[in-house]
Length: 230
Ligand SMILES: Nc1ncnc2c1ncn2[C@@H]1O[C@H](COP(=O)(O)OP(=O)(O)OP(=O)(O)O)[C@@H](O)[C@H]1O
Image (cartoon, rainbow, N blue to C red; front, side):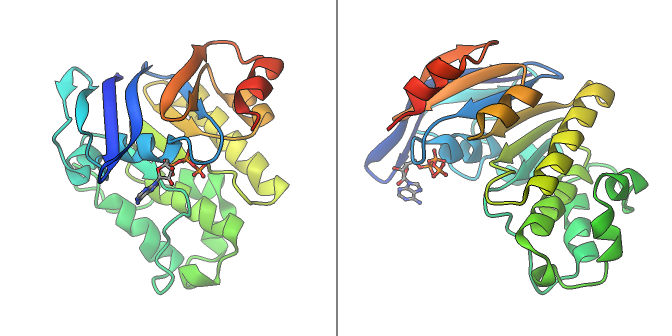
């Protein structure tokens, strides 16, 4: 459903992504791994349209979306959970979630109960400012905000980074539930944890210095350590 072909992305004159080709099939959970600073966030932001690529194409369900902006992509079914969460701290938890509805192409303006079943703490803290939430709770809110638009392609940038183990488990359960019960939804996950990646993903890409250096259905720990070691 999503294909990147020979993507090149630069910040001013500095090229950070070179010749990256990648595919995500419908219903697949694809994991993008790599050391800090190798370009994973740049790839995910380019898929979302937040950054523009210099070369290459992005095709979504057969449509060339390379030159389309993030709003267009969101309306087509892209949902993004950015690294650092980007929660509006002065808006309530509920208002933050409502923002996710803006991406819907239909007129639905209510939050499904499923979201609260996934993340009960968001119901308890519905009327509190987003800024009152802990890091882990903000991560759940960012995830919920993306889910309310019922995305068909969910882009998750390090959703487990720096959060406590029980919330990591909750996030793992949600990803597994989506995989089992929403078979039309595909997920691209940027992840550093070998165990987490292996527990949820069907296909793996490892990035190094802006290039794909490994891809496959298997993730072998020794190979990962070799490619990810400094
Ligand atoms: N806004 C920016 N301007 C200039 N260079 C940038 C910018 N953002 C990232 N870079 C550089 O691009 C390269 C890739 O960064 P990117 O954030 O995509 O890596 P990453 O693999 O996601 O790392 P991390 O795991 O630390 O988030 C790095 O060398 C980084 O310093």
